[in-house]
Length: 111
Image (cartoon, rainbow, N blue to C red):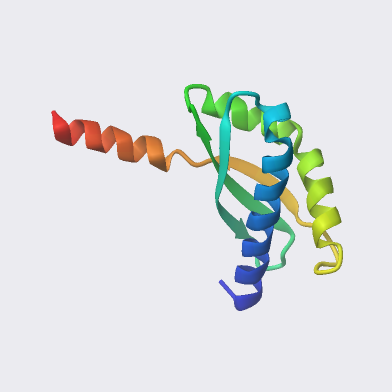
């Protein structure tokens, strides 16, 4: 990953986290959303945003709902990054289930 990609992905992570903090409760009430990672393509055209959701019982359905409303997030991202980028990247949200995976391994080790 180039230095430019790294800087842009960190800025996107910070900005999306701020948007989620402001509007997350209206999108998914009663859920805690955390932006865990952002990976951006070399041409800065596509950003893959990984989100951890707690409680995670309906994580895939929640991510699908977020992806259906990603225009809201992209619009907010465009307003925040309009001076840094010529074109706002297309965003795709993914479920980061690493915490569930860690918890599962921890439970298996305790048995």
